[in-house]
Length: 469
Image (cartoon, rainbow, N blue to C red; front, side, top):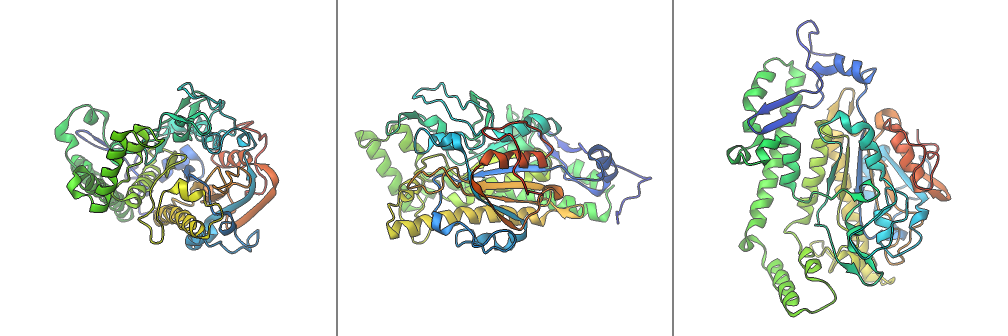
């Protein structure tokens, strides 16, 4: 039962905590319930769409669950998701036919959410020949939030030419396409992404005094005023929300401090960076200077990814956006995963395992690490209460890769998992095995439909995937 006296006070849904240089959208509170019901109907919550991209495919023989329907056993790679088994839809048999042509990677990555074949070029005039499904959603539901969509990543845009396949590397840095020729770059700096969500534009434009303070300090007066009007349950929700923002802000500052000075980096990382500098200065190897610089590892890739997924959660929780994507790495990433026990080398290199048992074991560990990060995001979303459900219950969070086996660059039967119930629109807890050749875009269309987004055609699909609800 609500703790709110409806005759006393209601909060408009689009309410903010404000201060000099900060604007924090509020999470859903009970004090908003009557107004939310009037806007959304029946007290429903908006459906959020999250898309997490993993490069370089999977170890195929350790990915697919045993059994189908509701009687399935998670595979070794997917086992970190056991806690969320009843929140999942795991798909087998989907493909993007438009990616069958061309190269090993770029056609698949750039067309993952468009279902189209990109135009081959070695220059900067790139063309995906379609709009990505997340941007179709942003165009229809993005006007209801502060940001139409949010694109996050971990690596800067890669330029130059991949001479192995004669494609520009630009294609490997983008999965979101606003138009056929306008990709949306990923924000890789957690602080900049945080500021987009919670700071006023004026703070980013030069008000250093405000920019140097915690956003919670800037809105403290407004927060105290609001808390004095809230009931007990809403006070607790607001405190939980503000504490979560404070924690992410603290972690961002800690990461920035760690990365800010070379002496703070571990000796083994400094040696890697010195080796790269020597290779660059001597002009050795195939890689361009920019590729080498971009391949430098961060101090803690796991923490970087966890901060980014937490920012996605905060964005959905605050309803700052309802559409967000995250690239764990660019296409053909050489990200060094030696920070994992038993792994020695770069992701792309290891994905070309040639059925070598040692490389296959390392490949599986890298896949599992990605699934663990996904599971961590689901953990967080399932902890956040909204009405009678959770933030995860009111969301669609997809995770996967446009390639099945990285060694074969196999575009068929792509690995894809979806979590969340979309406000009851998805019947989860199942492994759905589709007929061979079923378009991946039929899944994208079905998910869009569950979020209230209409599209008559996407890529090679004209109808939604059946049996989702």
